[in-house]
Image (cartoon, rainbow, N blue to C red; front, top):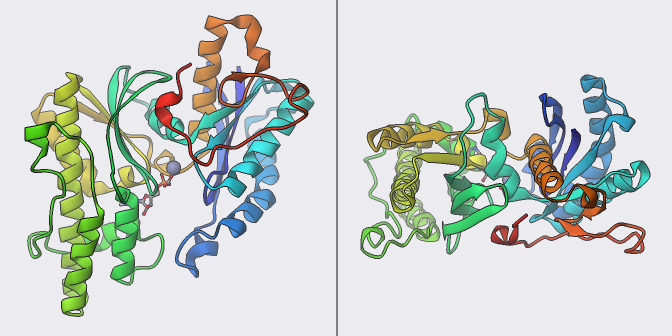
Length: 360
Ligand code: KG4
Ligand code: ZN
């Protein structure tokens, strides 16, 4: 089965063609980072307009690279949420138009499910069940993943996401947007031991078993530090290193505790912060000491992309086919059974959407 994947939830237009037996055939990405840079963050209206400009040319490019024709596509998978409503509407409307015109299912995919499953695209994929650490610009969650559609939340952030904390701290240090990668780069030159920063919600963990995260206090601590004395270049690098070490300490400790609590031996790391080299280094070492292994998506699939959405669509479609072969053509919008004609050609996006409601 050939699945076209469309991702437009935030500031990246991602398109991919995934074949259920042959794997990923082609993928393409356009990132809007340069466009949003001068505003210091994503401007939703500009994001939507740019998705409109990019999505069809990228689909054409991917089809050409894969040597595929429209008639070869068996289903379209698109990010239906969570994300920016206007940006989501671009991918959603195009996917449903394709679905209707070609008479094939259009599957609404949860963006975080895409991230969660993205390590399955790697050469050495994990096997179900596993613990997943989802660390992106908008989310920080630990989940127990039993199978496709079986997601149990173990802990999540009560305030800022890990990526958001990286970005805000980078901004305090004058590193621009998105600051996560820049801060990580600077941290390599700094001394992590120079500044004592808090490890929020870490001490209680062993007493209460609580796997939630909190990062806004950490950002405030950096704010106070920077305000007290304007850091020179060396001090900036030390602040970056100290901050990164604090976040990594918390992420590593909680991930390992989640493995211990669930009795599982595989940890999957997904989302943009999963690209952080220090996090990978520390997780690999700590997990190995505990007899566990860590799985990462290929570098290019850590941040938003169409391949993870096409893959999630292929896995959902495969499961639906096994469960109810006759119902598949009527599958659409997050697994609800309906078709566009019956709904008066209406479709919807889900800017807020709880992943634990995603049972097959
Ligand atoms: O998953 P993602 O591409 O987008 C969503 O939020 O869905 O994640 C983007 C986030 C940003 O906050 C970015 O600063 C962070 O991931 N990020 C990093 C690194 N690369 C990306 N944070 C720390 N270290 C990195 N190397
Ligand atoms: Zn994402």
